[in-house]
Length: 223
Image 1: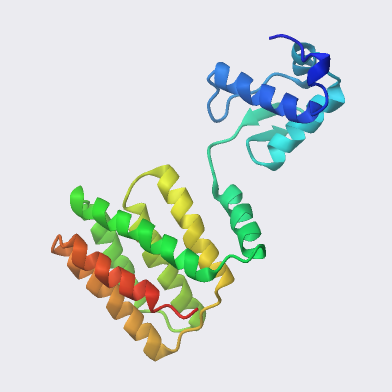
Image 2: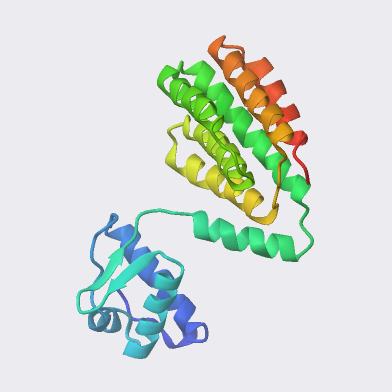
């Protein structure tokens, strides 16, 4: 690898960050693989050790890598939840509306419904049904909230697609984090019934009905 040239040194830390990422791509590193030492990167890029340390610190803060004291830097497993969390925070601070989150939830959860029906994910449907049954035991507002979150996350996990699950779980979690919904016992009973009717539609393989019920259910959310 060629040292970084003088005309590239203005955004030096940024350039080194990109070079380290490219190194990981070129060498096909996987989660848990160890990166070269600071000294090695210093020699490879022709920059000071402090610049390399700053670049590695940035990659650690953004959770691309983890640094173990005395052991070195290692590539992390893929996880976009923190990235999305920061994105949604900035989105909200810049005037984003909670109704837009509801729209995303409908879009992604409808996709999960299609996946369940299309691929006959009976085991996932069984788990979803169990979640509904367990939710009837909830007795406090916090338990109501947790049971509602669990139902929607279980629906999303039916896709078995890791990236999709990470994205959609973050959207669901963020919605409930910023929208402090307090349900009455009567409202919670209605919510459980809506969950149950969605599951029943799925059991009959009726994706369109399940999506219509889901859309109505999410739009009924207090915002």
